[in-house]
Each structure stands twice: as C-alpha cells, then as structure tokens.
Image (cartoon, rainbow, N blue to C red; front, side, top):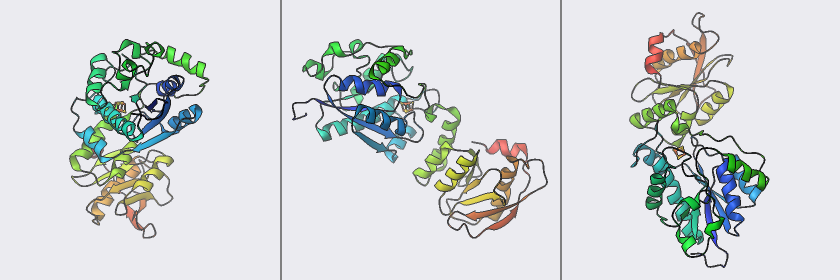
Length: 336
Ligand code: SF4
C-alpha cells in the first residue's frame, strides 16, 4: 500500500451532495484523497458538479469514460435490476472495482464512497453493501465514511489508519445531516438528490433494450438514446426525432456519416435522424419516416409538406422529399 507516511485513498464522486460531503470528511481526517468520476451519459453523475466539488476541496480528479465493458455489465447483470433496466448492484461493483484498480495503481490504502445505509432500496441496504464489498475486489478496504460506524470495521480501521470515531452513523433517506455537513464545509451549491440516472427510467430502459436486441454500431448510438423520440422501423433501421433545438443539434452531432437527416426546408420543427447501419440508400423509407417530422410539427394537420433529406456526411447534397401522412397506429406501434 502507500509508501509515503500520508495515508492515501480513492474516493468516488458523482457531483451530488453525498459525495461532495464525504470527500471533505475524509480529507479532514488528514488523508490524501484522490477522486474518481465515471462519465456515463445516462447516470446520476454530473461531471461539471464533480469537478467543481473536487476543485472546491482542492483534490485531483480522474475521469473514467463509458466503455463496452460497462455496457456488457448493463446487458448481463449478475445481481438483477431495479424497477427499470438499472443494474445498481453490478453498477456499484463495476465502479468500485475500477476505483480499486486505481487504488493499487497509485498505491492508495483504501477506496471510499458517499453511500449511506438505507438510502436506496436496491444497492444501499445492508446485504447489498456487504455483497458489493465482497465482489468489488477490494474487500475490507472499501469504506463508507458517512455510515461507517453502522458497518463492520474495515481493514484500514483495524490497521489504525482510520479512527472509527471519526466515521459517521448516517442512515436513511433524509439528507438532513449531509446538508448540515455541507453547510459546515461551506458547500453552498449542490444538485438536488434523487436519481437522475436514466437507467432507472422505464422508457429509457426500453430504448436501451431495443438497441441491445437489434445491435448498435458504437457508443454514439448509446449516447443518442438520451435524446429525442425513438422509432424502430425494422431490424436494422430506426429513427430519432429531436424534441427541441438542443436535441436537434445533438442528434446531428452524434449521427454517423451514413445516416440521413430529414428536416423542413426552413428547418422549423423537429430534426429526424434515420439510422442507416447498412449504409443503403432507401428513398421509400425516407419518404415514410418524413411523416414523423410533420406529425411532430406545427404542420401536423396540414397537407403533405416539402422537406429535404441528406446524408450526414454530405450536407450539401440535399434530396427534396414530400412527407407522407402516417396513421396513429403506425406511430404508436413503432415507438420505443
Ligand atoms: S442509479 Fe444504479 S445504475 Fe444508475 S448510476 Fe446509480 S448505481 Fe448505477
């Protein structure tokens, strides 16, 4: 473990209240804290807030990006899911395992999180915390300082590196004590607790399952699940419509070169991205889905409208198309 005299630890930060507070608690014990953040486009973590919390505490932050390994875990969790596709226990094991690898890399003594006993029904009840501890590859070296007095003593406590009396005994869903601690540390701004993880959203979970079932090309397809309305056309093709200007722009940004973009000529209304993994030209499919652009525009009840379509790789080569009306049944049966 750490060779210098100062005890070193890796703390998981999400940018929320609990993790912003816990890094201060551990730092105040005289520990050399190194933070780690998992950049997942759909999770409850927020990079800007995590970085701000670390800057405020004057602590270094390592960022780990979404990768296929994480998605494999979401596809096949060993310990079940919550109310939607969220595999919270496996997700925690994944993140803490990675934090443990970082712990060994930098010669730290333990990993800690801002988890609180009883705060969340799936991953923060006692047996789940014990399970995560056993499976995360740092058994005995995983501390939950906000509720550590309520849990068995860890190795750093047994070794005398952590004074158990300085650990806290917070439990339950109320954030009152964390808010009081935040005030003591001078932390005045933090996001409201409660989720934010899209994996806990049933609609998002359905979109993700649809993609797992039909396949995806790369992480951009996964990231694009976070915006817009999604429609499955057939086994290969789907389309996504932005719900506002920001989503329209993000969808264009994350489109693949072979995908088609469909818009009104004057660019009013939603932008549609036709996901085109087989890289085919399919005018009939483009005509069909153009009806979605009209359906979700102010021209919903007007006569068919002239639009233009182009491949994302060639925005100067516009194809004029006339939208075709779609039935409610077509629309609802394809929605994912
Ligand atoms: S809510 Fe569950 S699945 Fe989502 S980031 Fe937190 S632990 Fe992971």
